[in-house]
Length: 154
Image (cartoon, rainbow, N blue to C red; front, side):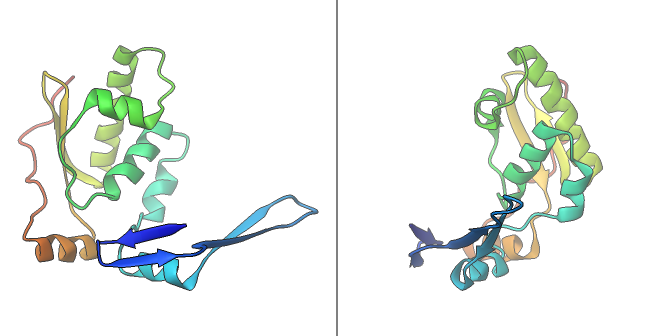
């Protein structure tokens, strides 16, 4: 396996180690030292307490991981989120309703500072990036998206 980080460093070899307890059949996964360095630099960091609050809410949990992995998420179509998330909603209308609730939950948890869904199905979110993400944005000369003026029904 090979992974290139920020176009500057490429890591090769195995990035994870694992073993299985043959009695319990549980796996233990360990990060290699190289992979650990990626996480320590802020490559991806998810707030565990926030994730714990989202258990039994699969779409909200997926959105949390997806949005937190982006320092300044670009606007994205509802249909794209539907396709990427693998949501089990029976139809697209049900999905849009679940999505609205999930985005509201993330706002209440202060993962997002706001969101907007336009009539043509474009989602814009504003979030406060982690310190490492803020540094990365500053190096790139970018800023997080400003808070949308309102939340809007789909």
